[in-house]
Image (cartoon, rainbow, N blue to C red):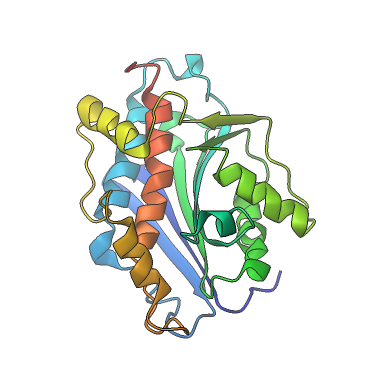
Length: 253
């Protein structure tokens, strides 16, 4: 599969080992300002690392994993970033797709691996947004469960792209919308804060306009585009719904 022009993708593979967290980072870029060597800003990754570790620690120490609805399943949590003009967003103007993948099929909890994956449509063009899904398919194709916050936004828009470009992808039947138990992602993360002392450091809520402006760049041609902190913000918006979903049976609201 050819990698599209003006796209970036990046991946962190997270595992727990006796001597600490194993973090394998990689990336691919065909956008002029970024290379495989600088797609990750290490100074901003504390939120991703700590939340990933908390998720894996929870699974390792869970005494009744076989009773959970996600036991022996592949669970994918996803989030998109779109143009801020919502009517255009629903046409398929998607800029970033982030997913966190937890595959528990046939694995002991101690062997669980968390994948944190993301792709960027750097020129923010509607006609190239389908590559976000095409690139992610190698990770999400066989998911049993999709976790999302507000499926009437994210899933609806992604289905529009799938239909418009006739992509060979179907979402699984089980889509868990975390907007059901929580009215906002801020409420969801307040729940995590109360139950497990969760907090964001480098990807705070309430700063989206600032993050998006930095990603969009300056002027008509978007000079000086920055993929972070909006990238970390997007990935955290996949990790926190996943974490809350795992915890909800143990720590009801």
